Every structure is written in C-alpha cells, then in structure tokens.
Amino acid sequence: MADVDIIKFIESKKNFIEMTIERYIPKEINQNNFKSKSRYDTDFKALNYGISKPLWDFLGYGGKRWRPVLFLLVSEALGADMRKVSDFLVIPEIAHNGTIIIDDIEDSAELRRGKPALHKAYGEDIAINCGNAMYFLPLQVIDEKKDEIPIDILYRIYSIYNEEMRNLHYGQALDISWHKGILKKEPNVNEYLQMTAFKTGTLARMAARLAVALSGKDEIMESKFGKFAESIGIAFQIQDDLLDLTTSEKDREAFGKSYGNDISEGKRSLAVIYSLINLENEKREILINILNSHTKDSKKIRGAIDIIKETGAIEFSRDTANKIVIESWKEIENELIDSNAKEYLKAFSEFLIKRKI
Image (tube, rainbow, N blue to C red; front, side, top):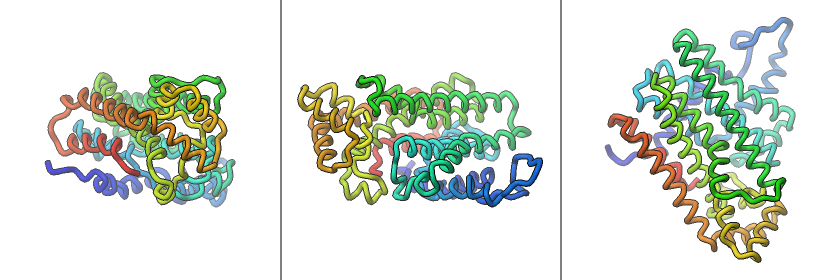
C-alpha cells in the first residue's frame, strides 16, 4: 500500500460524521424529531436556544474528529457490518465535545479553537447544561438500534460507556487537584500517565471498545484494542502538551490557541513533571512559583518554557509517547488480517503523535 495521507483520510470522513451526528441530534428540534414525551406544551424555540444552537455552534468550531475515525477504522479492520454499526460513532464524539465545554468552564478558558469558549458566548448556565446534555444525547443511538443489535451487545455498550465516563471524571479530578496545588504534592511520571489514561485515553478506549463489541469479538480482544486506543490517547495528550511548549507564540495564535496556556493554568504535563524531578532546587522553585501563580505574563511563561527545555523534558516526553504507541500496536498487529483498514489504523496512530497542530 502506498504512503497513507492520514490528514486527507480524516478530512474525507468529516461530512459523514457530521451527517451521522445530525441524524440523532438535529440542528433544530421540533415536534417531529423530539425524542422525549411531552405531557404539556414544549417551547421548542427556547429548547433550541438552550441546547441545539450552542451544541451545533460548538461543533462548528471545528475539531479533529479523530475519535469517531478511530471507531470506524477499528470496526472495519475487525470486519464489522458497517451499515449496522457506523452510527455508534456519535457516542464518543458527542461525549468528547461535552467534556470540552465543561473543561473550558473549569479552566476559565477564554478561547476554544480560535473562538470564544461556549460559556463566554452563551453564559455558564447554558454551557453547563448543554455540556451535560451531551453526555446523554448520543445514547439515543442505542435506543434506535435495539432491533438491529443483539441485546447482550447493547448491554456491553451501556457498560463500556458507563465505565469510561466514570474514568474520564476521575482523570479530570486528578488534573484539577494537581494544577490547583490542593495537596501540595507534585505527581510522578506514572501518576501522570494514569491520569492521562483516565482523562484523554478513556474516550479513545471507549471508541475502540465499542467497535470491538459491535464487531462481535470477545472481551479479551476488547481489552487489547482498548489498551491500544488508550495508548493513542495518552500519546495524543503528551503531544498536545508539547505543542504548547514548542510552538511559537505566532503559530499558537494562528491555530486559535493561547501561547503557553498550560503554563498559565499551572498544568502538570509530562514535560513539567520530568523537569521538576530533574531540576536543581533553585530553578525548581522558580518553575513551581510560575506554575502556581497562573500568570499571563508572556515573559514569565517564556522563562518557564526555557527552564523546561533545558532539562531534556521535551525529548523524554516524545520518546515516552512513541514507546507507548509502538508497544501497544505490537499487541494488536497480529490480531488483524492485512487490509487497507489495518494500514490506515497504524498510520493513524503514528499521525497523532507526530502532528504539528
């Protein structure tokens, strides 16, 4: 197979993903497509302003859509009936976007993908309700497919979703506790990796586990592919954190992201943790003070990034991300027959840790 243009491949799936989402979450809710029973009169204009409009405005901000692409690739690679299972891509993608809306509120973020964060555009009340609704709206797929998918598999789908959404909130709790300095304790490398497995790895793992279950494979295969996808998620987060440290101020703004945002938040990324472990006392204290001050001062942010770079933390983080993905790919490689889907899946995992945006 020729070299895979994975960016072009992901882009080619975006229209299909959006149409699938709209089938279950209409851009405009009305009497004909409303899934809940109304005893009295429902004010659809208010309902649309409170959920549909902000939800679709947020989806319109962009995003990589790599989780539903991962779901589709694993499903196809395992020989699933794509006509029956492809609609389930809605679950990890809408849940993911819901978590971002809530995350921006928790982080007091101003921007998301170059536009005002949803709580800045609509207010915190609408953003919180919309984000929370996005944890439940995609489960409509299960209701719609109950006559096509065996009941035992649908039960697995519910179980996977519940477990991974719990894990996601565990990861967020750890991340918040660390960057707020609540416990006056710095995490170590393995604690960071587990936090990231919970926070970022969980939705990738969910996508893969759903694909395996819907392909009719057993729980051993589900565990293997879940671990592979989790590794992609961890590596993706490591790379995302590195981009915050290595991309120029001008380029960050061009991508719609604030320069040094993770430093301002006091985020304990893998590079930060490695630096704190290896720095001498004086520079370690300087870095901790900058992180804990949540400064917006670009000079202090650049100073913190320079200290981090001196330790070799950038190289350590990249090596860690690569190692995690390579090792987990080896565990599933022989479970897949040779196919275009298999080649795309491998290229996809490599792309996520080498991307520049």
